[in-house]
Length: 411
Image 1 (cartoon, helix red, strand yellow):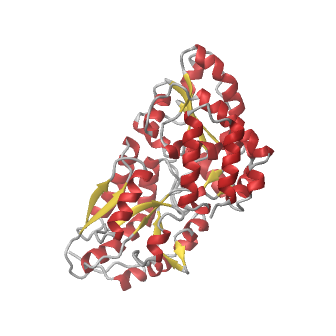
Image 2: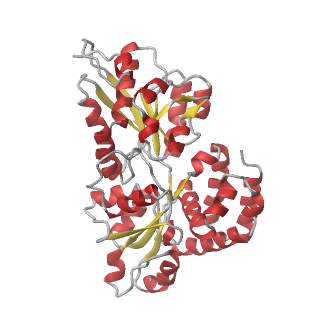
């Protein structure tokens, strides 16, 4: 067996001196079929790192909103795991400020993460006071609508190429007993779908003014009025979904019970597990086909400070493995996301991933809401969207007014 020496890794090498193998618990919320297949690639790479290490899977069922409080409670309560997932952005900010997370700056510098990362803002999201505290592992974009081609082709309908064509097709779909828009009943799903509609319908500039500049005037203005009107229509199009989890909604699309879903590109993992082929069985429209763009959301792993020196060394080995080119390709091909680094072989990428990569390389990039809005502000928006999408009693105009108030006080 080998001993991991940080100084050697900092020089881009792995030490070969004796050490004991280490079990390292890793917590995450990847539990759907596609997610489980993807995270297994991380586990396999770590288990085969040459040091006898072992990934102890700490999957927490449910969404990130369910898992994050559990993860945070363990870290603050003195029972930290070896590594834990958070989304890119500010979700772990208070933990870092409290001195509970490990500094990875030396590793990041020695491996030149900044030189190969596809969007430097994602490394910035890991950085506080000039120090890097997390490993970005993928680029997920919310900015997609997924369409079952067979639903349209088998019913003699043209496959939509943008949101407007999709909305126009809805009456014909209803006549065939098909739900136009699949939507799960979780706050983050309705809030995320609204964000996609805001980019597609109000446009990138308006979205940035609201989310980046916290401009409540724009949030209350005519561009966003169109978004809320479209969302009010979309909640009617989603009637009949009657599912909870996002992957259950994706399955409605895969099985042809629904025509489409607004969801991040992690939905691709479910299509792949079902044997579906991009461009043949399903289509993907970035920016709703109106404003093609990708948001640079995604996942990162943080490493709580540990007292056990063997586990501390294993943390750095895992950080190295997560960012390694081969691991990045294997994981992201199954996750449906884009690799965090551009110096990897993507010949195996499917048609939808290639669309995303082309937009990424062209600089058609949008920061995610996680990077711009605090968890508290996002929680307020999710609460509003839950009420809005679940009941027609809340009008588009009233919801917009409340949304503008949230943006006015956003931090």
